[in-house]
Length: 247
Image 1 (tube, one colour):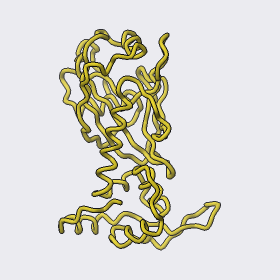
Image 2 (cartoon, rainbow, N blue to C red):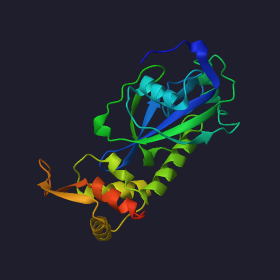
Image 3 (spheres, rainbow, N blue to C red):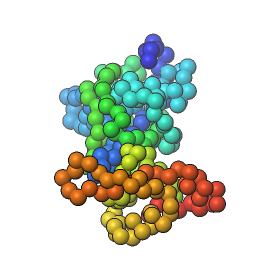
């Protein structure tokens, strides 16, 4: 992707990307290390940067994500706008901005985007001002640069709401998965234990899974049956007005 002249950057509008993944045990999110400065503060941040004046927000989000992490061709959905006047109030953030921005004191309103991906399909490669890029466990994150922790929490709350009424969790899983892996995914997103027997009974009753009549291979335990998401069945149910595919 071609880079544009830095003079075209809009100093007041940015985009930030919340890219969720699942490592088959825990919900993860893609973070970059923005590097250190003389003030203590979190080096970790969501992939984000200013937009150019001649690009729309969707274009900016895709460009920024690719420039910082190497990830591209990802469906991004707008989460919302974050424009608290004090969102850049920490000295560590202000000092870092002075090293990369022409107008570090400018008030910046950011448009956050969110996406769900299968982490096995993507290998982040840091570039631009990102020192590194990689997946982090959401449950272990307690601080991020700027207001990125608040953005992450808003994205997770949105994910919790949607997974209760739509089978969006399948976007985080490989094509073939076990019921245990699906169960763990829901527990990780919802931050609560779910009775395994009840979970399996409900998900199978929906009819949105297809038993592949295959079992896991090369696992150090008794292999489990593999399933796949039955999108055709889901669409049929959706047309009837059914909207409870979560737990």
